[in-house]
Amino acid sequence: MTDDSELVFAPLGGLGEIGMNCALYGYGPANARQWLMVDLGVAFAGEDLPGVDLIMPDLSFIEKAKKNLVGIVITHAHEDHIGALAELWPDLGAPVYMTRFAAGLAEARRLGEPGAPKIPLRIVAQGEKVAIGPFVVEFIAVAHSIPESTALAIRTPAGLVVHTADWKIDPSPIIGLPTDEARLKALGDEGVLALVCDSTNVLREGESPSERDVAKTLAWLIGEAKGRVVVTTFASNVARLRSAAEAGFAAGRQVCILGRAIERVVAVARECGMLDGVPPFLGMDAFERLPRDRILALATGSQGEPRAALARMAEDEHPTAELSAGDTVIFSSRTIPGNEKAVGKIINAFATARVEVITDRTALVHVSGHPRRAEMAKMYAWVRPRIAVPAHGEPLHLSEHAAFAIAQGVPQVLRAFDGDLIRLAPGDVSASGSVASGRRLKDGAILLPADQESVGQRRRLAFAGVVSVALALTPKGEMAGDPDVMIAGLPERTREGAAIDALIDDAIFEAFEGLPPGKRRDPDVVSSAIERAVRNSVNAVWSKKPQVHVLVVEV
Image (cartoon, rainbow, N blue to C red; front, side):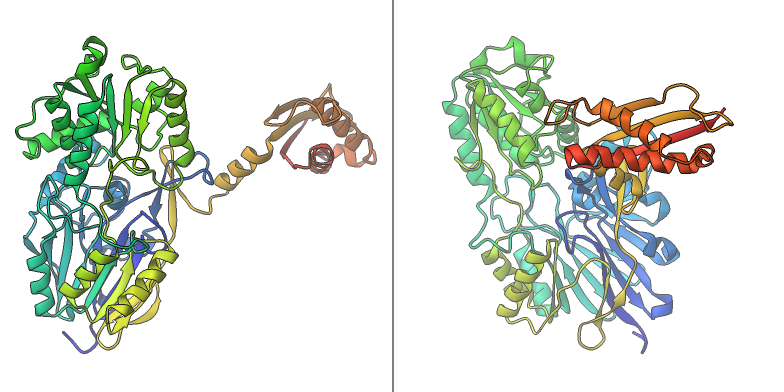
């Protein structure tokens, strides 16, 4: 380590929100620093971003320094850690490292998306060490809700950092390895400079239950069910899919798949040997031809996705799968914040049809993949870091985690947010500046900056509609015929029953006739006057101001 070399941490996503995880570690002098990226994920847009599909981190900082980006390491294959890779990798071009299962899902996803780039992937195994520039990265097995999840031990000349990513302590995770307690303790004995740790469940006391506890509940519920049974969960949770399938076979049922996302995951899981011993699953046609008490379906749609299999069944729109009174739907998942309305709509539709719905509110059909406080305390006891940096959470999670780390006796605790540049070594940990950060919005096939005006316009259109007016002017400043008016998203009548379109017509003519004759020949003046008049007239009777667009042409 030279005198002016530093080890820094620069989060670009995941510190200040749930999801969109992306972090940079830099080593070297400030003017010649080499960078390692950890994860490149997405967040999911809510109702405040109409038309937006996904949210991705703004990588403008590292794009400008991409010649110094030595590698991209993916800790696991959840969308909030890998989902932006295909979209953003072409602007980076660095080598990408991930486990076999993650690589299989990435390739399956690429084949399903025309035009997606072919990314050269370097496959690593849990427990393996890889030299990437000035970093030596060790992939440590941790339990999570997707196979082959890894924490990272990142060694540099300035010290060792443990980046947990998503993890929990589960002694019996059904598929894959448990969290490698022995290796984490050995790292603690070696001396850990900093622990960058998951904060998702820091508000919850105790320990998360095991996947095996869920498997027992599913076996009992499916064994007791009389009609058709549908289990919906996150498609990537292979352990849950296996537990549900084994429960179905044990109850004398055949298992079919409803949804392409689960089909892709199952195909990759079978290639990786994660479903060895589990009989083949049937296609969706089996749902209607098998007896009701002999079918179990694994279905997509646990988050209320409108085109997923579960939503289509709830609306009686699925081509082959239909549920009726006496059937059972098990939501073996948690509802991601923001999806409550969509999920509630599906549950209510099934309840109306007298289909029994079981959720984690009524039975142990889901467990989190993230650590609660007792598990976090064990991690801190094993690793014993000099520095703690809470990650993966909203501001409340990060604040609670910082207080928790102090209570565990960590000498230095620093709460960081996206865009902060944190010096980990040498010397005491400190905020040493900032880097460009923010969000990019995936809008159909286009990637937009977060401040794109079109998104704000869409929100306003959703709130108060739009009025478009087109009219032609003669050289004398007269209207050449009646204006063409289009109204969308406005009420048809006022509270008193007056027609809104008639009020708009009156406002247009009054505004035009109120202009001095000389001004009527100026298209810009006419456009501004009519726009203002229409907006004000609608606001007077509706208390909302629509978007008003006026096009004036000269003939």
